[in-house]
Amino acid sequence: MYKRILITLNLIILLGSSFKEPLTIYNVQKGLVSFRSDAPLELINPISNELRGIVETQKKEFAFSINIKSFSGFNSAIQKEHFNENYLESNKYPTATFIGKIIEDIDFTKNTIVSVRAKGILTIHGVPQERIIKSELTIRNGVISIRSNFTVLLEDHNIPIPKVVHEKLASEIKVEVNGELKPK
Image (cartoon, rainbow, N blue to C red):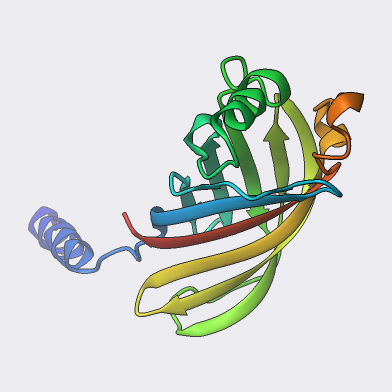
């Protein structure tokens, strides 16, 4: 009896180790975030290629962040300085984050293109806001590509616009995110 239990236990261990649990964690390998302020007197369109993030596909959970100081492509050095020091206060609030869950059910093992809604907390300038952000996922050969466009209202994140620059800085900022995630 003892020998039979031992053989059964060894068989379970042997068979169990030959089956791999599906890989469910994906990390951003390439990521780009740009924003656009289209005000009456000035267009500002900086970009950063320092998007960081992770998606856990079984739980449909995600977390993304961007270093505020990593944005470049401002119209002038003084504009970048004002962006970091006066508006986003990047020494005090160095990152923007979006953390939450994908609402739709997705089969991440199949090649597909699908629109999803991501529900979570978008934190910019230290101010969290619950958001649902639509995104397009392209899944090809185990690689997930994300593309999303959404707007951010500066007042929702307590980012002041001084009267002296209100014609040069839009109160509604258009954000574009593109990322490529691969298995961890």
